[in-house]
Length: 82
Image (cartoon, rainbow, N blue to C red; front, side, top):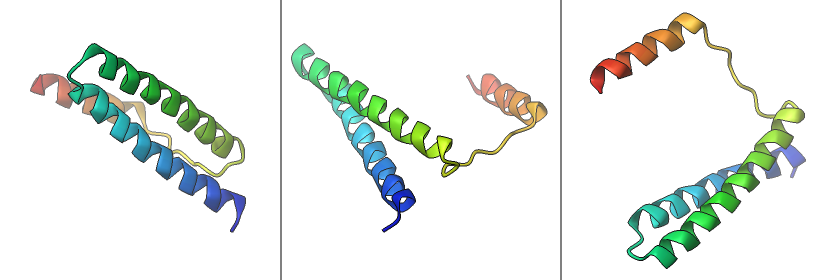
């Protein structure tokens, strides 16, 4: 298996872990449990960021540039909903 494939799989796994920790943080019933999930979430987010940065550095995670007019239009759309 290629390095890129491994990193893509790692990124998907850590994103799933972040999702689980986020929900654990939101749903926790005590301050201690909340803090434990929040700490685990923050650590997982740091790992996710490192993986993303490595992939982006190697050109393995491409992003698209969006026109400012589209950003402004979307922003206005959601501001009117709130």
